[in-house]
Image 1 (tube, helix red, strand yellow):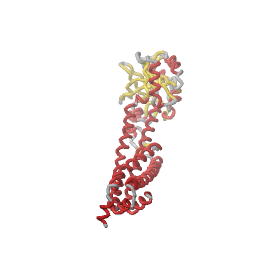
Image 2 (cartoon, rainbow, N blue to C red):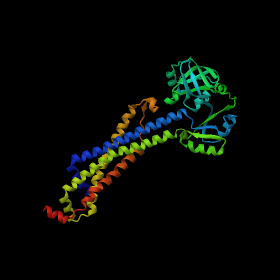
Image 3 (cartoon, helix red, strand yellow):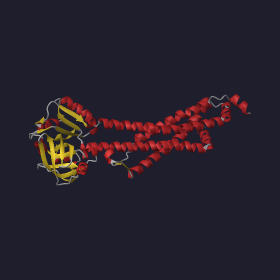
Image 4 (cartoon, rainbow, N blue to C red):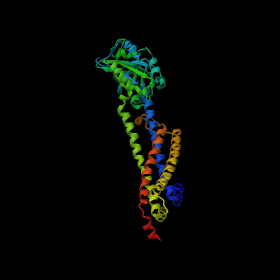
Length: 387
């Protein structure tokens, strides 16, 4: 009976009902779409980071380099979670073409191992890096643009006082992360060892690739206890500030846009309050006929739930539709600011469920206000005034 009466009362004020449903639908649509865009941005950025960074970085704890690194690699291979291991040399340098000088981060790698370890082949968009040939270097496309470099150009690499090496550019890479593309240069491992005066069995960094990238922090802690002579740093630790900022951003977006839904709920409460005021006599008659206060209260809660549920369902459908459109026609972004040039969309069922439940809970809470007011009428007094 309550559902029938609720539908009858809502249809009697159909314009206000539709407005309330539309307001809720709009808020839910905007919120679910914003969360889908945030998820896509976060996932794409993490993929970019993992495509160019090791899951765990091993560096010497008490010494300036890792001696007999092949023996260390044999020890690390015992851990079943480690999928691949890559020795390398990392350092800072200045690169100059004789006119422009730019600070860089230098990586000495084995190109064959790097191709198995990361998306090196994918990012190396032009040219190549010889495995053993000395005198070659690969630079990022943004650094090449900044300095006007081309393949075949000669550059000088300065790594210390009176330490200068002439190198030939043999390739360009593009990771999609502006800070890497404008600062990082790659050499083969023998060339890096020669520049930093390392022996053939010496490096200063070992990179680990795992089966489960999100277990990197836990595995790094375990390895740190097992091998205290080395520092183990996960990719989450290296990008802790960025990851925390993205998580906070998602929470802020949710809270800010949730206020749109709350405003819509105020509209529902207003509609139901108007119905209570207009139907005072009818409510009193029902009470006089023996209908309990609880049933009257339940009637208006049902009206609020019907309105809220209709808005939530419509909003989720609209949010899914808008997110689908944006997945085919992604929004453009300045790559030098956000690291990626387009925002991918990633819809998650949990987000839709959480938004829907939050909206329904708020709707129920706001419908309790007019429901409580409807139970306060005394049937005898109201009927005496009206009749």
